Length: 424
RNA sequence: GGUGAGGUGGCUGAGUGGUCGAAAGCGGCGGUUUGCUAAACCGUUGUAGGGAUAAGACCCUACCGCAGGUUCGAAUCCUGUCCUCACCGCCA
Image (cartoon, rainbow, N blue to C red; front, side):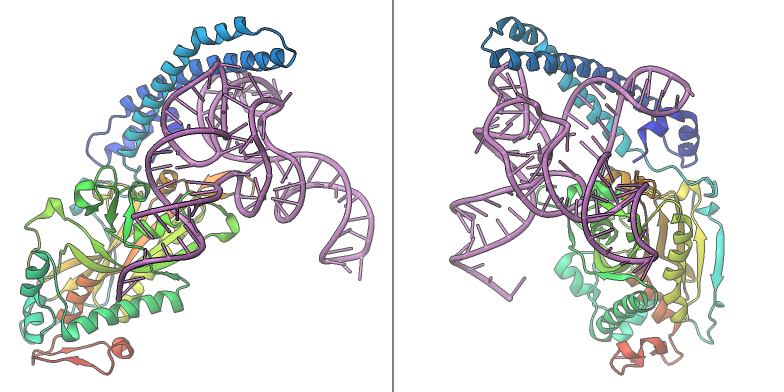
């Protein structure tokens, strides 16, 4: 949520920065609601002050046993107006808040301008692109030959867009999760969290999934709760409505969770294989820090997301999202993309974002500054990483001429002696 | 699912219709004392919004989980709701 005071004082700047995202945002309407709301509140406050004074007087007179009917009548003469103003103020405040919740974050001043994904600059590339003496297979074919995933039976149970990992595939999925969690907790200073996967509505509002993207979420209990679309939601919201001492920051958390997404707007896209699923596993990194450190923490966070990929020996690149490709709540985002030899394309496996105080303001997450003032924290998160696409890149990259897949050594401790995925 | 108890400031916790934004303690901040540490003592310390101002000082309003209601007046009474805890039932 943007700061209404900031919008009031810098309406042109807000318009300009939002325009960089593309899309229409009615700042004028917010300003008008704000002016009307404040006018209504001011009148209400004056009447309340008068009522309070008269009520106090009535109390004092009654204590002395004197008559108070005259003063009671005076309060009654405008009590209807107070009720009216209360209703009006609440309505305007609600509308103003709704308008603010539907307005995305401002792109960071350093976020590269651009209309869409084609304008995203590549920041760095890791390792060289692997080459093969044969035509590399894509992951669907590999999974079939190696018996790693049963798509047909998954559909029987859950419908299209679901996968059922089997045999060494299931083992590899679990191994990767453990590898990622161990790396981040043992070497990178993250505290491990295993969060709830069912989320209350206000937490979904807190991180920005609601109210705008409800159709992408799996709702349960008549919209009172939702299946987690990412661990970002439960983990960041752990600290909602809290006032942290500055000394407690930064907070660095890592969590595994399955992620549930309807993918409402993308039916038919990437339907083959496990590139886009309604349920997938992800290890997520979350940081809560002060505004002064968030940009540096963001760089470190992105590096933390990249680290396991280089340890696995994978070819990837890091790009920065331009203003037109930025997510709703983010002010600055890096995406990490893995190379898929089978499809000869890049797969997005991580999105590393700095949200500034946008989420913190929505969820009332603050810290006490050195000057004693309460300020909103900054929140960040990065996938560290999404599992299915990592799975794809891994088996496609390390496939051999004989059809087997030779696993990277770093996974050895997690695979129980399995060094190679064999044909079945 | 049933019964009962409860949600008050950064934290603990008192407060059953008016003088309560709210006792007390802890913590924080400032100071005195102190060889250092500890302790003691004094003072100070909620949040948000609106208004005023060059900026402060300042004024007003709201907030005792949340939403309604009763009343001239609600932390306090009533209703609903969310959450927490305890016991019972059920259950991996």
